[in-house]
Image (cartoon, rainbow, N blue to C red):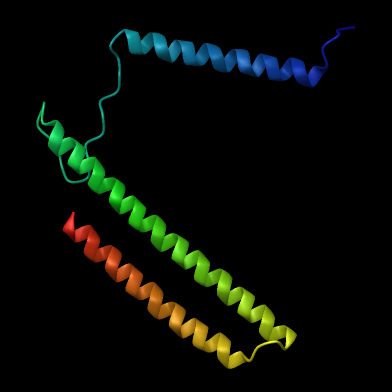
Amino acid sequence: MSAIPRQVHRGLRTLTVAGMALMSQAAHALDGNLPSPVDPSSGAVDDGDWISLIRGYIADGALVLGLAVGTVGLLWIAYTAIAKFNECRQGKAEWSELGVLGIVGAVVLLFVMFLIGQAADVF
């Protein structure tokens, strides 16, 4: 009988295979077979124009950050609406409060989406 439990043996085998795959990728990178970098969404950049490349990546990052803020806003309003719905079911709040929250939440989300769209046109 082996002193190593079967699950540990499988885990070590998986780590070994993963390590060999990473070393294989590193060997390919040493041969000069690196993938070409992805151009920013603002368009292709001339060779050696690092300033435009960095500016394009910053613009892409700002768009992703704006979309993340919009997503967090959507999730927060959804969480608040679910909490208010639960309070209404328990009798701690009125149903009209849930309706007002839905209308105000929709207006806030539309405004945030409008601002994100305007910011995307600036970049």
